[in-house]
Image (tube, rainbow, N blue to C red):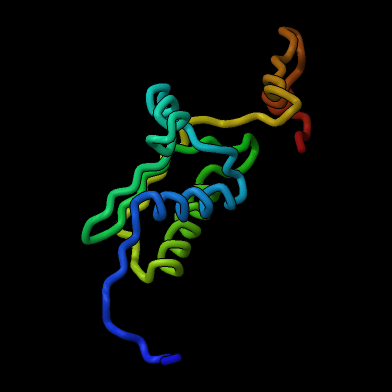
Length: 140
């Protein structure tokens, strides 16, 4: 069996690139899923689209993602990590660089405990830090 490489061409489908992007994105810390509009979700259920993922193939590979992020994690850090993971995945699998990765964070997903409690408002007559500072007391 010959180990010499022969010049040729290889074809990668849009679905294969989309699968790479989906796997890299969902493997990133803080990503809880993909967000999409209802009609795209319906097409996804029918197998005609990937909700939340748009891939454009040309001279460069451009990726657009609509994500939901877990509540309590830094959104900017999650976006940086997703960008890095998508670029690495495509570069490693296809040997091509990605032109643009656009990430839209469409919402936050709360854990099983539900929506976090809202900030408590102090009572009308409660003494706050501003009143303590105005009175000359030491405020830590």
